[in-house]
Length: 135
Image 1 (cartoon, one colour):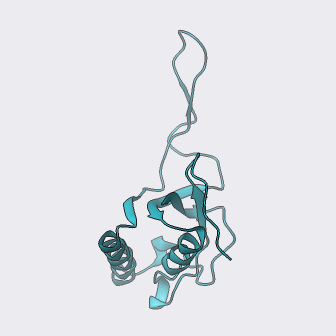
Image 2 (cartoon, rainbow, N blue to C red):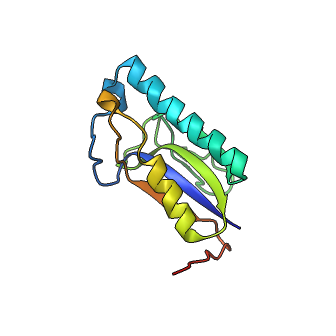
């Protein structure tokens, strides 16, 4: 088994097909999206492939070390970056192809109008985990 991180981006990836920002969705559309994510995770819990996952708020602070005896440096409450993480999920699967398959399914979560978002997800293996690729 190899662990993978699926990253959902607020922005930074190529625009999805259904490119309506979540803050413009109706409450029912947001609920349907969250339900899809919860159902997806529940299904993977039954197969033993789900490890953990969380949605994240768009707000955040960048923090870095600034030297011995000095307080950490922050950029304030809003990062000046194109890449903000909307959420993440960790999966544990037998082969790389399964990780790609699951990322594709997660990309089909509904968005505006109940249509699949077709969002890009970043699929990253855990360090030290050597993905098994079958062909």
